[in-house]
Image (cartoon, rainbow, N blue to C red; front, side, top):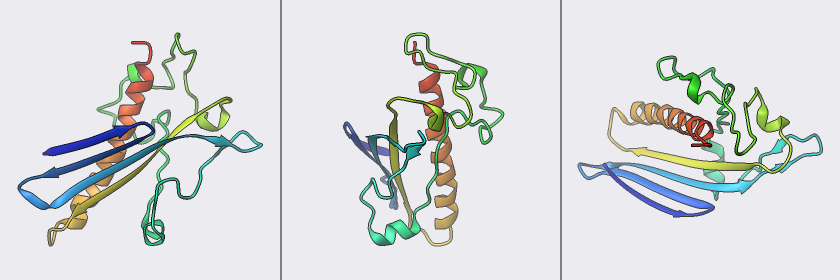
Length: 154
């Protein structure tokens, strides 16, 4: 695998490819934005933070990755030491997180918007590979950020 990454906060781009599979590529674009809150305190998610075309907007799937939600965490990968509902940071004064925490918090909140494009143009396996990797990426993002939150004081 070949990974190329560019990081210039608040924007990051990652390209993953393999020299033996010229029709396979994963492109991840991330932008970190200071979230806005409505008068009720809930986060406001703008429609098009990343530069989607009109056609891409019709096709996109939006997933809110809630690191405190344990519903889709694999039982074999679960650890109480990295469960944001159980851990807290003494240094930052954050946590433990509760259900729907991002709409109950006050003060500033940073939101990371990610655009993941998976291209696999091989007849017969394209959709299967793309669907599998889409789920894998979602789990990877969630588990990584759960650990980042839990290890804040380390």
